[in-house]
Amino acid sequence: MNSRLIAIIPPRFRRRGIGVVFTIFVRALLNFLGLAVLLPVLLLILDTESIRSVGTLQLIYDLCGFTSDRSFVVAVCAGVVLLIAVKCLLSLVLYRTERNYIYDLYRSLSRRLYVSYFHRGMGFVKRSNSAVLTRNVNAVCFSFVAGVLRPIASMACDAMLFLLLFGALALYSAKSALLIVAVFLPTAYGYYRLVRSRLNRYGEAENRAHREKARIVAETFRGYPDVEIARAFPMMLRRFDGAMDRIVEMQRRNATLGMLPSLLTETGVAAGMALLVMASLGTNAAEVRMLFGMFAVAALRLMPSVRNIMSCWAAVKYNRYTIDILGEAHPDAEERSGEQSAERLPFRERIRLDGVSFHFDDAPGHDVLHDLSLTIRKGERLGIRGRSGAGKTTLFNLLLGFYAPTAGSILIDGTPLDDRTRRRWQNSVGYVSQTVFLTDSTFAANVALGEREEDMDRGRIARALEAARLSDFVATLPQGMDTPIGECGCRLSGGQRQRIGIARALYKQADVLFFDEATSSLDNRTEEDINHAIEALSARNAELTIVVIAHRESSLEYCDRIIDIER
Image (cartoon, rainbow, N blue to C red; front, side, top):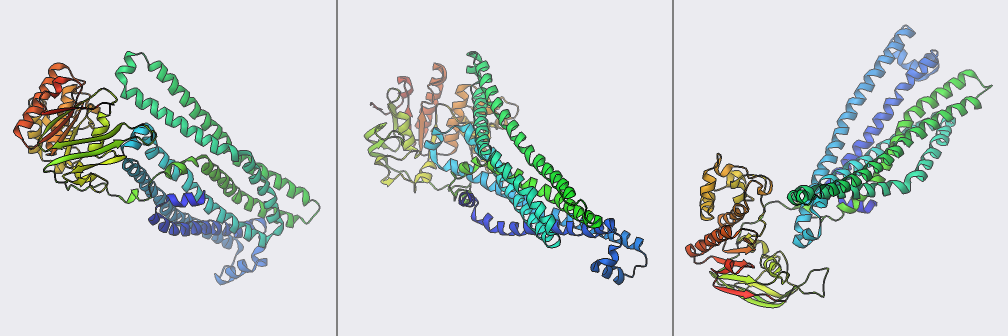
């Protein structure tokens, strides 16, 4: 697990982590010193005469010119309080350094996983569940830093403190040190044996239940009309309740296991004190009091450290599944900028498909398209038709660069469409699908999708809306093009959503427009209006290339050429 854990952490955070390790050591040392300064108070409480018998106390007494034991005791107590306060303040400052590191790393890992998922391409996205990917980017990344890295840092601090305290105690009182070992070693080992096989299993089960719950909620609201009409909500609710039951059960079990470190350590300390008293019967009373006091102070200070080490180890085991998920992210993804080149791939003559075949990775022997050759000339209006499943949408995804051919090639004016040219080609094309993607924002933001508000060309937006025959409707709205359209355009009709997709492509000033069943879900009147709008666009710009997929002949009437795709 250690090598995989380190591989997940970006290199710049590994270097920064060296400083964090140093702060952990310093914080452990401060905690040790905080306990050490309590020893003079303990000695004075147990034996006032220790002022004379302990050389250090006598030296301080003489150097500071004290004349009474009472004033010396008061001064020692005041000094101890001051030192403890300073120690706590320094520990807080050091802890802030550790905390900032942890949450900066969370931000970096979440961004890296988000970017990595996106750049794995459409094939990966379509094979995955969006709700699961969303949970991984948001919740799983946080669980990793809060449930794995932070507990590891806390364990390291407490382990260092334990070693320092135990070493000092062994030098001062070997009997107390041996008793500490006798108390805490069996306690820790017993806890390890009891829970080691359960924690990871509980964590994985809870994560699966969370993913199921997230998927159910997303599907319920995304498909609200169908769920309501089909009376499917009770079934969805039962599945939701089942996932919640599993989450609560895993949390309940984890909470029960989380109580064990406290119970075991407290029982062990009580047993150790009882053993010390029984073993010391008949010996010197002062020696017994001192030994008992040393053990009590050390045990009570070590007990939280041992308890925290066990609890943190349990948290790491419980959240270990996050390491597998974060290991999926490409190590270079976090360094990628969100900005993409706006350079276009020149298109002056033709798009050529030469012997193109394609199959999906999970079906290597089943070509969706086989040995397809096709030429699309600049300015042409090309219609593509074929029965469902013939590969029309796959053809579009190949032309858009979302998929790479498994055989053959796609050439833009002789330039291969591949990973080197894909971004520039996508800058040159517009795409309108059957279900246009819309963000929960305004008309303007959806037309100029991807641009900052201050960079939007509002004049160009207005012209695009007019060309898509949306300007009259937008003019009737109180906020015009700044009117919110709702989630997924829920405040708009189907035709209006498609028109926004057309306006977006026009705003981009694309050289090629791809329409993938863009009117198939609309009524005949709306489909006719949109087809007339597309035809008018082509008439105004003779160099605009339009490629259309459609089932209905009426959607292809304005095309110069129609090809059939058969399987």
